[in-house]
Image (cartoon, rainbow, N blue to C red; front, side, top):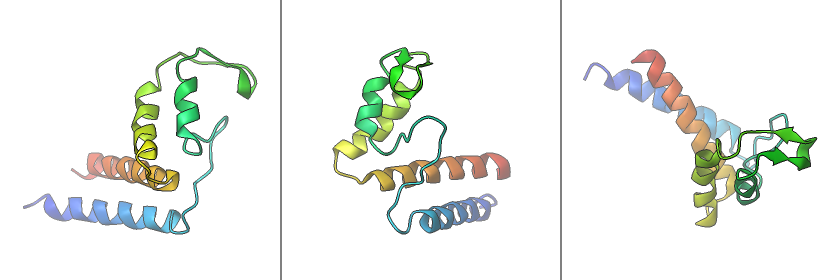
Length: 103
């Protein structure tokens, strides 16, 4: 019972922040080299290659981000909009960070 209030508070703050950011149904476009939530299927295909020629020829370890792209590609294939998938990922990150700090 002692941890219920902090968990609820972190849940509410995370949810409100995500609702404010994604209320218009638009993607949050940040990043140095790609927008992973814009076309997750395309990005998922590129995780299998070590050389990324489409972004200035960047080397990256093939398959390292495969679980992340698999996680965000599956809901898109099921018909969930990409902005909603991005909002869910942001909520999970905020909530996990908040829980790790307060509990």
